[in-house]
Image (spheres, rainbow over the protein chains, first blue to last red):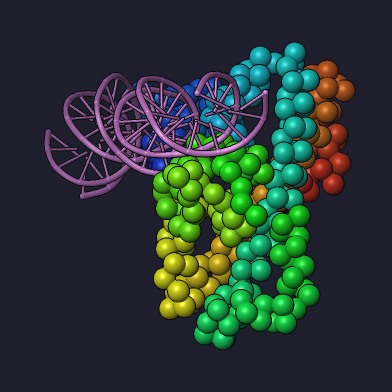
Length: 146
Length: 146
DNA sequence: ACTAGACCTAAAGTAAAGTTTATGTTTTAT
DNA sequence: ATAAAACATAAACTTTACTTTAGGTCTAGT
């Protein structure tokens, strides 16, 4: 199955110029063309999926390009690629821990402003904060700051 | 307790120029100065903690500034601020789901290159992929693509 | 009193990741 | 055959979040 750049754009929710930019940066090394027009096959689709994945890992385009270069170089870069993904795994796991703390803080703030809304006053909340804060909510705050 | 910009820089692992930039952008509205030199109190520290938190939520500086403006305007923005944090909560929860998928993909790739390393060949792995892939690993791949 | 180190500002510069623009070609539907 | 829609390129432009630079001022220790 072959796709046009417009179809890929819809499939992945990327702009057409983004896809052209990735191509220009060398992230789609096997992309074929017919009369100058890009034709994406399932392999290219999988590559774009991987690019999206690595972007969500927080990698820069040039770092993704480095990985793509390794795939082009064949079996003698297998070790590098394994190491690369082991590192990403660690990074993402750490990132998720971090996001969990952020979420605790956000949940605390949701409680805080909900309570402020009920009291119709930040001051009243602040004055009686100790009494008004359930320990389950205090825990969120403490975890976020740990 | 009062802190210098250098101490804050260390505490939060931010560069001094980053902190000055946040101040310039209006993110630290209550920051005091003595002879032009910034002095951070516990309130400012908590604000910086919040800024860091909101940056990790994926917010831009100007969006964070908007929130800070609301805090300056007092009780009549409580509703806006509650809505703001409820939205952040949704966003972060969605982001964590997304990251979970990313992690599944990364774990799959770790397995993939570990196996390729054992076989010393991407081709051999690809040829016998169906037989070589345990269902637990296949699940990771499928979940990542779902 | 002096000096090193920490602090200050304003303005210019930078990197990343695209977007926009201007112009031209290809494809598709009638 | 033609016209609209989709595609192409190169080059300039944009945004965000800083960093760097240049030239001063403040503070702390001797």
